[in-house]
Length: 183
Image 1 (spheres, one colour):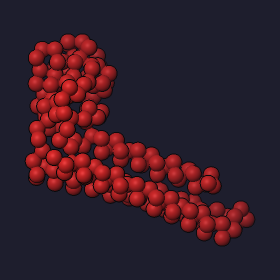
Image 2 (image 1 turned 90 degrees about the vertical axis):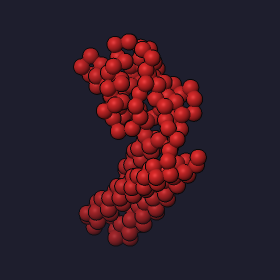
Image 3 (image 1 turned 45 degrees about the vertical axis):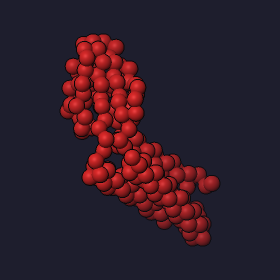
């Protein structure tokens, strides 16, 4: 593959990886520890991921437990969970925090499917913007450096790459939607 194209493929792959991370944060009725990835707790003045201040485990299909390494972090972790948008009230026994995920209602499943589609569309737009940037860059190459046929070939190759990544986004969205609607 032409190195001029591989730059844009790298950017498209980063967009796809970002979407994968976004989808990991959407809960689908089962306990998924990745839902906590974006949460930060105040650890001695430093915003720190929950996974770095305690042990996160999934003992049952719809339960996540968090056991802080320092008991003083219990209140900080609970505060971070309560102020987040995951929509689960934490329970604790003085040592361990339990997050019990309720069964998703049909209405909530539909909302989550809409969110999945929206995030998928945003990723497609990002990929198309990368294609546009690539095409603009190719058009700016001077006629002495490269022929018009070569520019056309680069644009065709970039379009094929764009189609490939848009298809991957569609597949990821379909997989996540299936996961959400599966009871």
